[in-house]
Amino acid sequence: SRPVTAHLFSYSRPPLPARKPEVLWATMAEPSGRLTFVCGAVVGAVAAGALTLALTRARPRAAGRDEGDILNGVTSKSVEVAQPGVFSEEVVVPLQERPDNAPEDCVGVSSEAAGKAAGCAGCPNQTLCASGEAKKPDPAVAEVRDRLSGVKRKILVLSGKGGVGKSTVSAQLAFGFAARNLDAGLLDVDICGPSVPRMLGLLGQDVHQSSEGWSPVYVDDKLAVMSIGFMLPNQDDAIIWRGPRKNGLIKQFLTDVNWGNLDALIIDTPPGTSDEHLSIVTYLQESSMDGAVIVTTPQEVSLMDVRKEINFCRKVNMRIIGVIENMSGFICPHCNTEQAIFAPSTGGAEEMCRKMNVPFLGRIPLDSKVAQAGDAGVPLSQLNPDSTVAKAIDTVVSKILFETDVIKA
Image 1 (tube, one colour):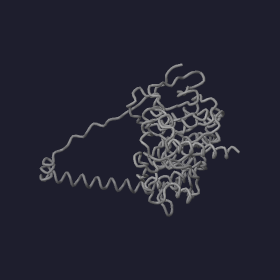
Image 2 (image 1 turned 30 degrees about the vertical axis):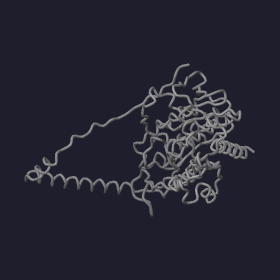
Image 3 (image 1 turned 45 degrees about the vertical axis):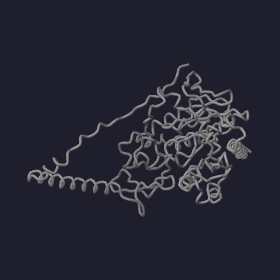
Image 4 (image 1 turned 90 degrees about the horizontal axis):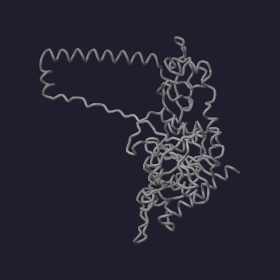
């Protein structure tokens, strides 16, 4: 076998030379300078007006809304078929229907206008769409289904906002499954911020490739891990990738990693609803995905983004296993008084779950031992097995197992 290494690219733009204010004003004070400035401004205004007029004629707006508005996970626009003056009725394009390298005007591979619309001109997928080949299922979907056929539970961990402890919760859940003598896997698809190797105590480990695919890195006999963090030549290297390249790596993680038989595969995703999430949902559409666990903190600033995450799950038909309220209060170790660091001004996650008819999995309070466990790469139960936080995590694991067993039943 041989180690797998990620190739990184960075770009640094040299700073533009600063122009002294007094030189600029001196130039403007001269008659020739004023004339040059006025002529340049007129020419620029005319060019901008012509460009705006051309774009307006080429892209008429749909009635009642701006073209290309993204509404509840779909793109809405009017489509100009490649015949002068012929426009189709307004269409709704699911985001999964748009290839990664498609232009913003993409009508979707399943549309009757695919490959024929005006926005298709110049798209690298135009020939495939026009021939109908693009409508065929991505073969990678079947590959993922076969590769993960031995995985009983497939669980996404999501968060609407960054900084709520999503990766920490993912790591401790993985430790919790393994502690119950279950074969667990943790897949880190947070491509630009891979913290899982640190939190699992696996810094410096390598991914090896063999005839059976990529071999995950093992914490012990019960817990396997995969992350781009294992492929970085330097842990401080920045990963500066656009969507298509992220999508390609996620596809490899799902099709090439030899997970074997697992009781649960936890997939740690980046915050929000972006390329990584759409890729995961697309590739797992035939793999009997159990659903999503959403992590939040109690305050409204976090909850408002979690509501978007819940609506995203509903739009892509992904079941919500439940919501975890992380950093839910701090119990002073000296006086045993509980303080709400992140005050639940609108009732917290439990009230939000009640209103949105989503299961509530429980609260995990703040504890400095959680940060220590993450930095040391060990389960919290190893540092403080009798703590309130350790018991809360164990309760959440029990509820996730119950919810996923209900699905299997």
